[in-house]
Length: 359
Image (cartoon, rainbow, N blue to C red):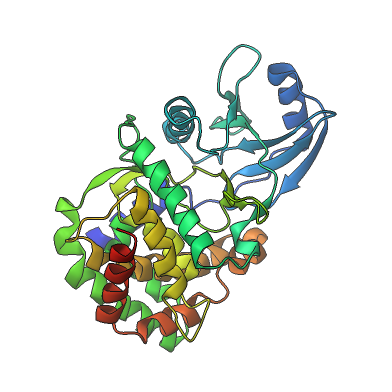
């Protein structure tokens, strides 16, 4: 059977993103040996559920660390990009609460592992950021704005960052949304398919013609409420920014579109209220161009639709991670429907209003 160029592109993108293959979990004893040998660290390792990496929390007598081993199909250069972005932020914006990379005893920022299949995997150690994640609290508008401000500061600090792998292919990058229409075929619910097709149409008509002229730089790529650590008792509220696994060079507006997508319809009577509150904060530190602001709600809808489609597709292929994957996306289609029920002109007016209110 012949496949179309679009299908080939989508499959290649999914493969480059490390989403097409499953792998045996790495042996915890091997991880312990490597940590002792290269980092002089010993303690109790607890495996954590994550999207792709093998991830552990290491508890020592004095500290906690996060240990990540990259999946076997993720290129070493892509892992190096993620690490380099974190190191850049640590050196150029040390005041930002970005997760820190721990160096090995020899001063390296990672350890390369080669297992029986010959494919390299990269082990890295980070400081463990204590606290609640944003997804577990119910912040008011000002606290959501503080989250937006923090993302704006991260993006300002990343403006000057470059890396040989920063133009990586990443399925989660909203820039490629219109090239993943084949994912709709894996959705059996006809109402969900209709919602997806409507969002693809909106994106194709409004965003695709502008893709080449949108302001671009390296962005965090996944500033979701699961990657933002908070302390409700602190005046700063945001105490940690974690997980640079989706770092990529893309349109700047696609960075705030990610947390917007996660906030859509959390208040069903006002589906866009929380998302707009976050963007108001983002614009205090990283203003969005007037010409690009109308594309932001469509990008947020695209991201939410993409998560619903990719999650369903991946849960079919990786049953061992099905519960974790579906847990993060259980209300996505309902939220897409509620968000689409509001006139996009009204949403854009709301975004302009909150922007001028904080000018």
